[in-house]
Amino acid sequence: MASTLRSETVFEGKVFKLRRDTVRLRDGTVVTRDVVEHPGSVVIAAVTDRREVILVRQYREPAGRALWELPAGRRDPGEDPLAGAQRELAEETGLRARSWRLLARFYPSPGYTTEFKWLFLAQDLEPGPSRPDPDEDIEVRAVPLAEALAMAARGEIMDGKTLIALLAIERGGLLSEAGEGADRTDGVESPAGR
Image (cartoon, rainbow, N blue to C red):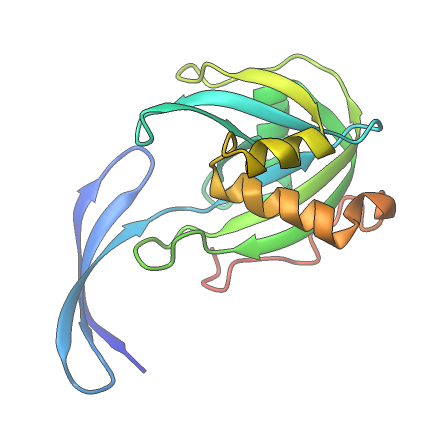
């Protein structure tokens, strides 16, 4: 097992911190690793009664283009994942859901970041006003699940968390189980306690 010998914060920004770790590997070799510290995020697969998936399109500077994605966002410090998902869905789309189910938890890029994602299925949707963050310009569209899957196959959806969610919904037959586990996260927490 590797062990961390030393950590230092080299950058602290609005969204994340960058730290440099000195690590001893199992064979005794000492290496340096740069790690992006991230508070974690939530992803919402919001599905209408007509089996439409709610997608948002927004410009992503690192990608250099606008991307179709599921509603998602960073957790506030100490925020419960379900509460974060409910907040993000309302902020980005104006929707509220009466039924919530945890679908998956995962590290999107464990080679360089501590970010941990919670993916929720939200159903029994109700409209309301959206409240995007001041730096967000979001287009919202309800897309039939079959069309969203076709968009992914054509390369029109290139966001990893969205691809994971669409496959989970399609392959897991999850829409037939609407309402099970509503308003529960089953005590989910990231393995690191974040």
